[in-house]
Image (cartoon, rainbow, N blue to C red; front, side):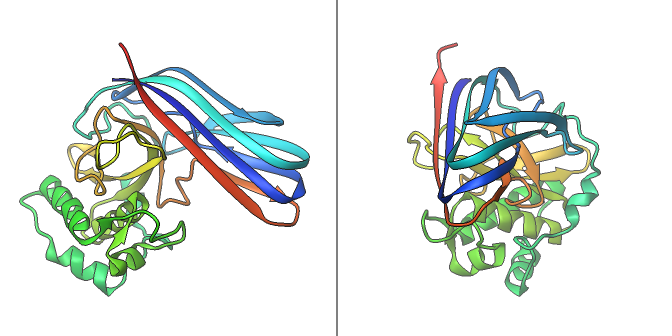
Length: 268
């Protein structure tokens, strides 16, 4: 599938800021399931710094904006070919050992309810266990936008029984780790939503490491493994660690953010 992606994030400040430093994880991953043809990142008024590939295989760019400015726009546009690899992350080069992803984070720290859920799931082997864990999260957390926020933890989402892809992913990574399966949070894009309509936001899913197979993606929000509709950007222990945009602004006052994402299929 050939996809065209347009992604714009606008930051607006109540008072002009004096300086902004950003770390962008917005370049598609390099693996057998996707090939990037064009990709452009632009930060309004920004100066691009050095880029590097981190130990997880993600490409990260640094940008600096000198003020005073009252708004900053980050724009991404590009074309990418994707293909279905049954969720398996083949050909992705990274140096971090999978066992690193057995540790939890503030967003995925388990409580008694998450421990009970993990203990209730069984599988015929490690791959089947990963599938069953994903389905258990799908069953326990209904997809419903607007009921959670960026700071909602896995335990809070499970207690609420509702949430969005971030919540499904946090819960799945938490219970997979409890079962001894290394798991991580993945950020990216999706061509369609649960109801098959055009997707208008970035997406997230989990990757679970299965011995003998490697990293395998699981999207509990959509009850499936990532296929050709998915574009992978990067990964981390949780949403904050895998955030596509991270930054520090020097100034006072409020900050508002508007995000617009468009993913379109192109003719081959």
